[in-house]
Image (tube, rainbow, N blue to C red):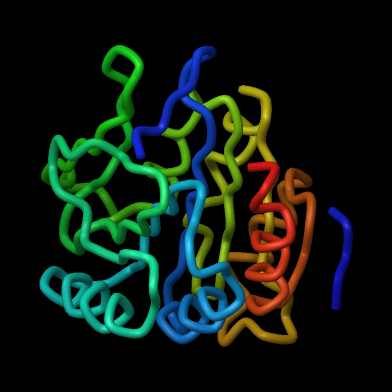
Length: 203
C-alpha cells in the first residue's frame, strides 16, 4: 500500500541525511529495505535500532557482508561520509553534530532517565542542520521517534516516512508517528527502499 502522507557537505552547507529508527522486527525490515537500494549510495544513512550493546556491531557486520555498500557501527567523532550506512551503537546515545562544513558523530553515555539507547528521538532531533533530511520510522513498540518529528519538519527540507501496517511486525512506533500529522508517506519497508532508490539521484 502506498499512502501519500564522501563528506556530507556542499557549497551551501550539509546536503542530505537519511535517518532511520527501528525496534522490534527492525533487522529484518532493514534487510528488506536495503535490498531495494542501488549498489552505490550517494548519501549517508544513519540507523537507531533498539538493541543492547555488542549486538549492534554484530548486526552491522552481518548486513555489511550482504550488501555492496558499506554498513558499519558509528564511532565517536567519526566524519559522516556519503555512501555509508551507519548503525548507532547499542547502549549509547548517538547524535549528529556540525563542525565547520562537516558532520560528525557524537556518541555519549545515556542519561539515567533515558528509556532507549540509542534513542530515535535523539538521533532525529540532531539532523536539523542538514539541508535535506529523510526520516524513516520502521516497526517497533512504543512511541520513540515521534516527539522529534515536528521540530525537524519545521527546520525545512524534511520528508518523513512511516512503515505501513502491512509489513510492520509491531506498528506502535509508525502509528505514533502518523498520529503526529507530520508523516508524508506510509509505505511497506520494501516500498520505502524503492522510494529511496527512485529518488536517490535527487537526494
